[in-house]
Image (tube, rainbow, N blue to C red):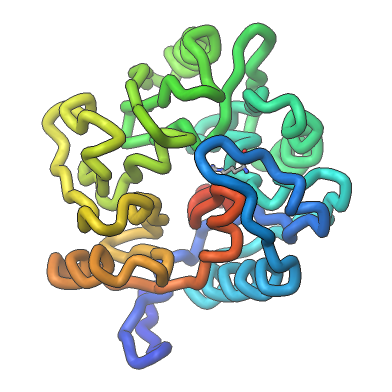
Length: 273
Ligand code: CIR
């Protein structure tokens, strides 16, 4: 891995994303018709959302990731949230069957983009799965039993991944859209968690870091490598805590797409080349 140090915004970061691909897709102009589960409609400024998304993409590029941008999907309001369409492992990828019907047409273009990189497995009816419900921690795969992802999908994932030695765990969450709203992996065995939305004992003996209680949405971070995180700039108290713990933080503006219940992990599919 290339570890060339560089300076941006005064903070020393490392180009730790070399050797990683990130699939992204621009914000759809119909984003205001997005699915909403826990939020009331709040007008999304398309130009601002696009600007913030471009900042996100350029930050991934500056960290060394090879970004593949899929064509815009003007008719699919939630199509910027590519994370929900697939889960990519080192050995294969699982193409999801999103829980919201309006999101199912987002999947084929993501599958097409992945087919030259991984062997593909597909979640079949009656299984439903959003990629935002899946955390891969080594050979443990945690799947949120949310309003979008069901036990049938978990059974199919277990079946596909047994071959590669993974163990799949169904995880209970409350009051949030996806497992990754409540928790993300920020180290080989370290989770950033909002304990109001998940009982972290479900992650076994892992190390747990909690978000600041005033920032319930701050548990969604992208762990690139080593101790480097891509983190939404809207959560300064949790960011400060993480910096004190030794994390390097690449902060990105993400508040416009937060009105669509999206966070930083949702906007990319990141995997080893
Ligand atoms: C939805 O409800 O499906 C979108 N409005 C937000 C999806 C966010 N995706 C994610 O957290 N992985």
